[in-house]
Length: 395
Ligand SMILES: Cc1cc2nc3c(=O)[nH]c(=O)nc-3n(C[C@H](O)[C@H](O)[C@H](O)COP(=O)(O)OP(=O)(O)OC[C@H]3O[C@@H](n4cnc5c(N)ncnc54)[C@H](O)[C@@H]3O)c2cc1C
Image (cartoon, rainbow, N blue to C red; front, side, top):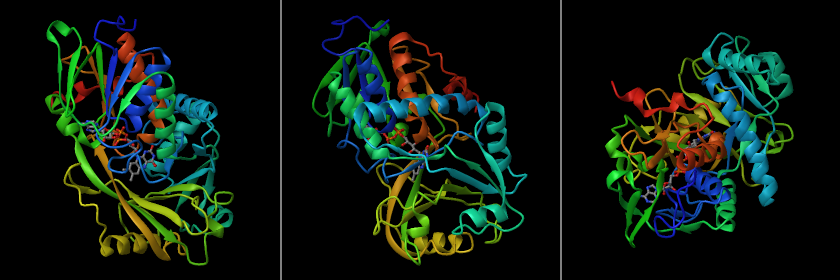
């Protein structure tokens, strides 16, 4: 049951943080008739958190764990619906490759998810990859799982679409209004949220703080690490032609193998989706510098760009021509890289979503649906036991 209208002034649910997850929560809550107040410290679809940079990989043959696959199936449906409802160009399913040791966790895990859920896929030899995608030059000892329904979604467009739809359904979304504190009212009778501009009450609070979780959810004591990550756009030598999405997939390349020598950094990248001068985007997966959301160094050092160019050179020899731009972004990771999505263990009027560990964007709309379930009914039919904060209680 939604909280009774009128019990807490004009809002049933307050959402803190209107990035990827919070904009999705606002969208789903407003669509179900809840009166939503959204509070965001920056502007709409800003570039200070974790949901910017033009593209995010989406895939369903999930080597991270088959438990994620049902959520991904639903997420794809919800992305499609959002795209249709708003007329925005949110996704591009150009196909995706996971390249690595045929017996390694990325290739084996992708195959397991594909087989368990009957997902379309092909297992390719290195030679088949080189023939199909001449930009990629895996050595003979590697293999790849090709997933035709993998591709990318556009994070800023997605956040904007969700904010637009929430607003159209009556949500009151306030930007440049940082939350300074929150508390549950005595007897679990709702919540009070304080910002630089005022104090608000509501029946339920949804907290989606991204890299600010260590501050806004300090009471949970979660073992979160905030990492500085860098996205690079290079103008490929010889031009973007071979990298256009009609002929180039998204890719993840397990760094433990490959011709560049033994290096455990996984490389991932995208086709050239930003027009002739936009280049192709590439980045390292995980293992960024530890930082905090407020102190992160946004400047990218020349040696960092040189490191990724060197790593890419034996794998995609034409990719790292001229560096066009480099942008920092934040991962907020848990020790097991699984998310935290739950009712707050100590406060029944509060739900939380954080710790998306560098792989959360493809789940954005389904996380919005889950948070709306938790806020309005106290439970969800989606499988979220994996995401309980209780798993860290003993550590
Ligand atoms: C470089 C990079 C590449 C990635 N690649 C992929 C990928 O390919 N595929 C994939 O699925 N995922 C990927 N991810 C992960 C994914 O983007 C994140 O998991 C997701 O964006 C996290 O969303 P969020 O809502 O938790 O955080 P955010 O979108 O950052 O939202 C948190 C919001 O809370 C706001 N906030 C914080 N504190 C306050 C406060 N006190 N008051 C008001 N507002 C506040 C912030 O301003 C922010 O807007 C990537 C992440 C990065 C950084």
